[in-house]
Length: 114
Length: 114
DNA sequence: GCCGTTCGTTACGCAAGCGTTTCCTTCGTT
DNA sequence: AACGAAGGAAACGCTTGCGTAACGAACGGC
Image (tube, each protein chain N blue to C red):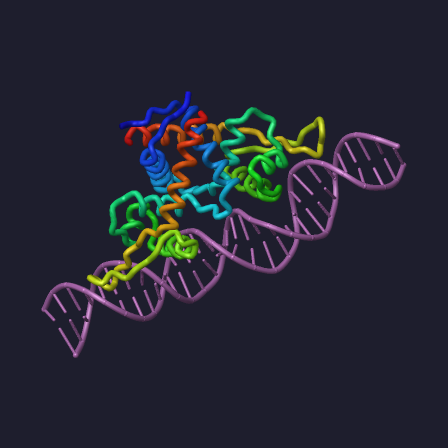
Protein backbone atom coordinates (compact mmCIF):
# COMPACT_ATOMS: atom_id res chain seq x y z
CA UNK A 1 0.00 0.00 0.00
CA UNK A 2 2.27 2.80 -1.18
CA UNK A 3 1.63 6.42 -0.29
CA UNK A 4 1.93 8.68 -3.30
CA UNK A 5 2.83 12.25 -2.47
CA UNK A 6 3.63 15.29 -4.56
CA UNK A 7 6.72 17.29 -3.53
CA UNK A 8 4.44 20.00 -2.21
CA UNK A 9 2.46 17.52 -0.16
CA UNK A 10 5.55 15.81 1.20
CA UNK A 11 7.18 18.97 2.51
CA UNK A 12 3.85 20.49 3.45
CA UNK A 13 3.05 17.50 5.59
CA UNK A 14 6.41 17.59 7.31
CA UNK A 15 6.03 21.31 7.81
CA UNK A 16 2.60 21.14 9.36
CA UNK A 17 3.51 18.28 11.66
CA UNK A 18 6.77 19.83 12.81
CA UNK A 19 5.10 23.14 13.44
CA UNK A 20 2.30 21.64 15.45
CA UNK A 21 4.64 19.39 17.38
CA UNK A 22 6.87 22.32 18.31
CA UNK A 23 3.89 24.25 19.52
CA UNK A 24 2.34 21.43 21.48
CA UNK A 25 5.19 19.46 22.99
CA UNK A 26 7.89 20.97 25.12
CA UNK A 27 9.88 17.76 25.13
CA UNK A 28 11.39 18.43 21.73
CA UNK A 29 13.08 15.12 20.92
CA UNK A 30 15.96 15.24 18.49
CA UNK A 31 15.63 13.53 15.15
CA UNK A 32 17.88 10.76 16.38
CA UNK A 33 15.81 10.21 19.47
CA UNK A 34 12.66 10.12 17.39
CA UNK A 35 14.19 7.62 15.01
CA UNK A 36 15.19 5.41 17.92
CA UNK A 37 11.79 5.65 19.53
CA UNK A 38 10.00 4.74 16.33
CA UNK A 39 12.39 1.90 15.69
CA UNK A 40 11.64 0.47 19.10
CA UNK A 41 7.90 0.71 18.69
CA UNK A 42 7.50 -0.22 15.04
CA UNK A 43 10.02 -2.99 14.63
CA UNK A 44 9.49 -6.35 16.34
CA UNK A 45 11.62 -6.85 19.46
CA UNK A 46 14.04 -7.60 20.86
CA UNK A 47 16.00 -4.36 20.64
CA UNK A 48 19.50 -3.94 21.97
CA UNK A 49 21.86 -1.01 22.20
CA UNK A 50 24.28 -2.34 19.64
CA UNK A 51 21.45 -3.34 17.34
CA UNK A 52 20.00 0.15 17.33
CA UNK A 53 23.43 1.67 16.94
CA UNK A 54 24.09 -0.43 13.87
CA UNK A 55 20.67 0.28 12.44
CA UNK A 56 21.01 4.05 12.77
CA UNK A 57 24.66 4.13 11.87
CA UNK A 58 25.70 5.79 15.12
CA UNK A 59 27.92 4.85 18.04
CA UNK A 60 26.72 3.01 21.10
CA UNK A 61 26.98 5.94 23.49
CA UNK A 62 24.53 7.83 21.31
CA UNK A 63 22.00 5.10 21.95
CA UNK A 64 22.77 4.91 25.65
CA UNK A 65 22.28 8.63 26.04
CA UNK A 66 19.07 8.67 24.05
CA UNK A 67 17.74 5.84 26.18
CA UNK A 68 18.74 7.74 29.31
CA UNK A 69 16.79 10.77 28.17
CA UNK A 70 13.75 8.95 26.89
CA UNK A 71 13.83 6.63 29.87
CA UNK A 72 13.62 9.65 32.15
CA UNK A 73 10.63 10.80 30.14
CA UNK A 74 9.03 7.39 30.63
CA UNK A 75 8.97 6.66 26.91
CA UNK A 76 11.11 3.53 27.06
CA UNK A 77 12.46 1.09 29.62
CA UNK A 78 15.59 -1.04 29.94
CA UNK A 79 15.87 -4.56 31.27
CA UNK A 80 18.86 -6.85 31.55
CA UNK A 81 18.69 -9.89 29.38
CA UNK A 82 18.73 -13.04 31.54
CA UNK A 83 19.88 -15.28 28.72
CA UNK A 84 22.97 -13.19 28.17
CA UNK A 85 23.51 -10.81 31.03
CA UNK A 86 25.75 -8.56 28.99
CA UNK A 87 22.77 -7.53 26.91
CA UNK A 88 20.17 -4.93 27.72
CA UNK A 89 16.76 -5.37 26.19
CA UNK A 90 14.84 -2.20 25.46
CA UNK A 91 11.20 -2.34 26.42
CA UNK A 92 8.21 -0.33 25.33
CA UNK A 93 6.09 1.48 27.88
CA UNK A 94 2.45 2.43 28.01
CA UNK A 95 3.40 6.07 28.05
CA UNK A 96 5.60 5.68 25.02
CA UNK A 97 2.88 3.91 23.10
CA UNK A 98 0.49 6.70 24.00
CA UNK A 99 2.97 9.30 22.94
CA UNK A 100 3.41 7.76 19.51
CA UNK A 101 -0.28 7.18 19.14
CA UNK A 102 -0.93 10.86 19.62
CA UNK A 103 1.90 11.71 17.30
CA UNK A 104 0.43 9.44 14.66
CA UNK A 105 -2.91 11.16 15.01
CA UNK A 106 -1.15 14.46 14.51
CA UNK A 107 0.36 13.25 11.25
CA UNK A 108 -2.96 11.88 10.05
CA UNK A 109 -4.83 15.07 10.88
CA UNK A 110 -2.27 17.33 9.26
CA UNK A 111 -2.28 15.05 6.23
CA UNK A 112 -6.01 15.50 5.86
CA UNK A 113 -5.63 19.26 5.93
CA UNK A 114 -3.35 19.28 2.92
CA UNK B 1 -6.23 17.37 -1.95
CA UNK B 2 -6.10 15.64 1.42
CA UNK B 3 -3.67 12.87 2.20
CA UNK B 4 -5.39 9.95 3.89
CA UNK B 5 -3.09 7.84 6.04
CA UNK B 6 -3.66 4.92 8.34
CA UNK B 7 -1.99 5.09 11.77
CA UNK B 8 0.50 2.51 10.63
CA UNK B 9 1.31 4.45 7.50
CA UNK B 10 1.66 7.74 9.34
CA UNK B 11 4.14 6.47 11.90
CA UNK B 12 5.79 4.21 9.38
CA UNK B 13 6.44 7.12 7.10
CA UNK B 14 7.87 9.23 9.87
CA UNK B 15 9.96 6.30 10.98
CA UNK B 16 11.42 5.57 7.57
CA UNK B 17 12.18 9.20 6.84
CA UNK B 18 13.76 9.87 10.24
CA UNK B 19 15.85 6.77 10.00
CA UNK B 20 17.12 7.55 6.55
CA UNK B 21 17.76 11.17 7.39
CA UNK B 22 19.79 10.21 10.45
CA UNK B 23 21.87 7.85 8.39
CA UNK B 24 22.43 10.21 5.51
CA UNK B 25 22.79 13.67 7.00
CA UNK B 26 25.27 14.54 9.69
CA UNK B 27 23.76 17.99 10.15
CA UNK B 28 20.97 16.70 12.35
CA UNK B 29 18.71 19.74 12.63
CA UNK B 30 16.45 19.94 15.65
CA UNK B 31 12.71 19.77 15.19
CA UNK B 32 12.51 23.48 15.86
CA UNK B 33 15.10 24.28 13.27
CA UNK B 34 13.34 22.09 10.76
CA UNK B 35 10.03 23.80 11.48
CA UNK B 36 11.64 27.21 10.98
CA UNK B 37 13.34 26.16 7.78
CA UNK B 38 10.14 24.78 6.31
CA UNK B 39 8.21 27.84 7.39
CA UNK B 40 10.68 30.04 5.56
CA UNK B 41 10.57 28.02 2.38
CA UNK B 42 6.92 27.09 2.23
CA UNK B 43 5.21 30.24 3.42
CA UNK B 44 5.31 33.41 1.28
CA UNK B 45 7.83 36.01 2.47
CA UNK B 46 8.67 38.26 4.11
CA UNK B 47 9.79 36.46 7.23
CA UNK B 48 11.03 38.22 10.33
CA UNK B 49 12.43 37.03 13.61
CA UNK B 50 9.47 38.13 15.66
CA UNK B 51 7.06 36.74 13.07
CA UNK B 52 8.63 33.31 13.21
CA UNK B 53 8.81 33.47 16.99
CA UNK B 54 5.10 34.17 17.21
CA UNK B 55 4.28 31.49 14.67
CA UNK B 56 6.20 28.78 16.49
CA UNK B 57 5.27 29.95 19.94
CA UNK B 58 8.87 30.44 21.03
CA UNK B 59 10.99 33.38 22.14
CA UNK B 60 12.96 35.57 19.79
CA UNK B 61 16.40 34.32 20.86
CA UNK B 62 15.37 30.84 19.83
CA UNK B 63 14.83 32.11 16.31
CA UNK B 64 18.04 34.15 16.32
CA UNK B 65 20.05 31.14 17.37
CA UNK B 66 18.42 28.86 14.86
CA UNK B 67 19.14 31.39 12.12
CA UNK B 68 22.74 31.61 13.30
CA UNK B 69 23.13 27.88 13.01
CA UNK B 70 21.31 27.44 9.75
CA UNK B 71 22.96 30.53 8.35
CA UNK B 72 26.35 28.99 9.07
CA UNK B 73 25.17 25.92 7.19
CA UNK B 74 24.18 28.10 4.27
CA UNK B 75 20.54 27.13 4.50
CA UNK B 76 19.21 30.64 5.09
CA UNK B 77 20.39 34.22 4.88
CA UNK B 78 19.62 37.42 6.75
CA UNK B 79 19.26 40.89 5.29
CA UNK B 80 18.43 44.16 6.97
CA UNK B 81 15.14 45.63 5.88
CA UNK B 82 15.76 49.00 4.24
CA UNK B 83 12.22 50.20 4.76
CA UNK B 84 12.49 49.72 8.49
CA UNK B 85 16.04 49.13 9.50
CA UNK B 86 15.05 47.54 12.79
CA UNK B 87 13.75 44.53 10.91
CA UNK B 88 15.72 41.66 9.55
CA UNK B 89 14.31 39.86 6.57
CA UNK B 90 15.12 36.19 6.31
CA UNK B 91 16.06 35.09 2.83
CA UNK B 92 16.07 31.73 1.17
CA UNK B 93 19.23 30.37 -0.40
CA UNK B 94 19.92 28.05 -3.27
CA UNK B 95 21.53 25.60 -0.92
CA UNK B 96 18.53 25.67 1.38
CA UNK B 97 16.15 25.06 -1.48
CA UNK B 98 18.27 22.16 -2.61
CA UNK B 99 18.38 20.74 0.88
CA UNK B 100 14.60 20.76 1.18
CA UNK B 101 14.18 19.44 -2.32
CA UNK B 102 16.25 16.42 -1.44
CA UNK B 103 14.41 16.04 1.80
CA UNK B 104 11.11 16.11 -0.05
CA UNK B 105 12.34 13.40 -2.36
CA UNK B 106 13.27 11.36 0.66
CA UNK B 107 9.74 11.64 2.02
CA UNK B 108 8.21 10.76 -1.31
CA UNK B 109 10.43 7.74 -1.80
CA UNK B 110 9.87 6.42 1.68
CA UNK B 111 6.15 6.95 1.21
CA UNK B 112 6.17 4.80 -1.88
CA UNK B 113 7.87 2.01 -0.01
CA UNK B 114 5.08 1.76 2.53
C1' DG C 1 40.01 -21.74 35.47
C1' DC C 2 42.05 -18.31 32.07
C1' DC C 3 41.85 -14.91 28.67
C1' DG C 4 40.47 -12.61 24.76
C1' DT C 5 36.06 -10.76 23.22
C1' DT C 6 31.61 -8.59 23.52
C1' DC C 7 28.15 -5.53 25.63
C1' DG C 8 26.70 -1.53 27.61
C1' DT C 9 27.99 2.30 30.45
C1' DT C 10 30.83 6.01 32.18
C1' DA C 11 34.21 9.72 31.88
C1' DC C 12 36.15 13.56 29.48
C1' DG C 13 36.36 17.90 27.15
C1' DC C 14 33.73 20.32 23.88
C1' DA C 15 29.94 22.33 21.11
C1' DA C 16 25.20 23.82 20.80
C1' DG C 17 20.62 24.85 22.59
C1' DC C 18 17.84 26.78 26.31
C1' DG C 19 15.34 30.81 29.01
C1' DT C 20 15.98 35.16 30.88
C1' DT C 21 17.75 39.50 30.89
C1' DT C 22 20.19 43.30 29.03
C1' DC C 23 21.73 46.02 25.25
C1' DC C 24 21.86 48.73 20.86
C1' DT C 25 19.83 50.55 16.95
C1' DT C 26 15.94 52.39 14.76
C1' DC C 27 11.43 54.13 14.51
C1' DG C 28 7.42 57.17 15.45
C1' DT C 29 5.51 60.66 18.05
C1' DT C 30 5.54 64.85 20.04
C1' DA D 1 15.54 67.42 19.55
C1' DA D 2 13.79 64.28 22.99
C1' DC D 3 11.65 60.05 24.45
C1' DG D 4 9.30 55.78 24.78
C1' DA D 5 8.58 51.63 22.19
C1' DA D 6 9.97 47.94 19.03
C1' DG D 7 13.11 44.68 16.70
C1' DG D 8 16.85 41.85 16.88
C1' DA D 9 21.21 40.48 18.91
C1' DA D 10 24.37 39.55 22.72
C1' DA D 11 25.41 38.03 27.40
C1' DC D 12 24.70 34.99 31.24
C1' DG D 13 24.62 30.51 33.51
C1' DC D 14 22.78 26.12 32.73
C1' DT D 15 21.52 21.79 30.52
C1' DT D 16 22.04 18.32 27.03
C1' DG D 17 24.14 16.09 23.22
C1' DC D 18 28.46 14.94 20.83
C1' DG D 19 32.81 11.78 19.69
C1' DT D 20 36.49 9.35 21.62
C1' DA D 21 38.47 6.57 24.86
C1' DA D 22 38.51 3.84 28.88
C1' DC D 23 36.04 0.75 31.96
C1' DG D 24 33.68 -3.30 34.38
C1' DA D 25 30.74 -7.19 33.94
C1' DA D 26 29.64 -11.26 31.49
C1' DC D 27 30.42 -14.70 28.00
C1' DG D 28 32.80 -18.61 25.47
C1' DG D 29 36.46 -21.32 23.76
C1' DC D 30 40.42 -23.59 25.09
